[in-house]
Image 1 (cartoon, one colour):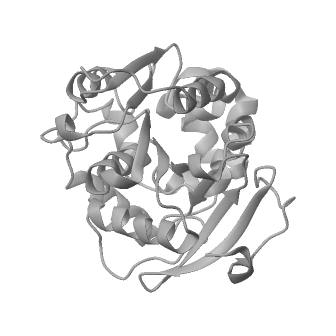
Image 2: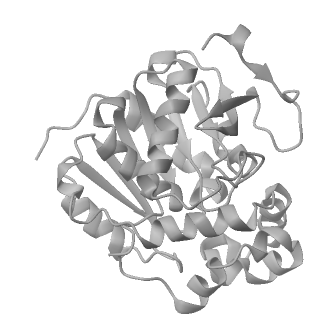
Image 3: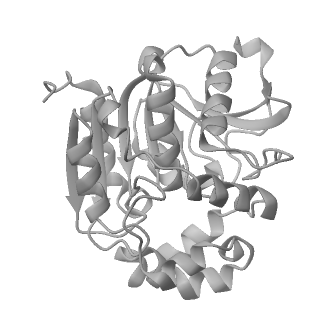
Length: 289
């Protein structure tokens, strides 16, 4: 799709919109989807971002700003941010199908793909379902779905509800126990994160929960063809790091980076991980094991 055919929704200096991120609306599979594009120096090496459960594109502002001149594509999943909510629950493959159609409309044939948490599950599904469209894969703080080792019960219980998106005081109280890492000790980081969160629709949030609960990649991870970088925090209450080790052992061309941090290192340590991710995306692929 040419720039002339896309409708610009917001000014580039809107609150919590990453620098240079242009916000557009597309109609895909009958839904109005809010899409962000940050132009880079190489359109042929664009990076598609999949966000965490229920999260809008504003949440990744800090990370996008840290990615220098990489071309970025990000969109609000149905029911998250400002995108419409689908009428009925979807399986993960339907979210991947939506993604492929978004890329079709935007005119991208192949992209690098990065997924955070719930978005990491979708990134795996996309890399498997549309292998020809996924050049490289980055999996951050994620697991293999229903087959993974579960996190701490208190953290998982809090994840079952979108309350943290609706009540910022509640978010500030639970952030340390939920996300670990620097969120345990830095109230300013928690306040900044809470300020960027937009409430998803309840239906859209629970549809994402259901999609993840009925999905697993463990039995086909060995078929993921894309060179893969797996990044995980050692203090992650939601998804224990053992899951990252398992995925790294199953994906044929995977590298593992365990960090001394929590679940949201993409936000709390963006200045550390962004250069490493950029290097991984731009260098020649490692040899397949």
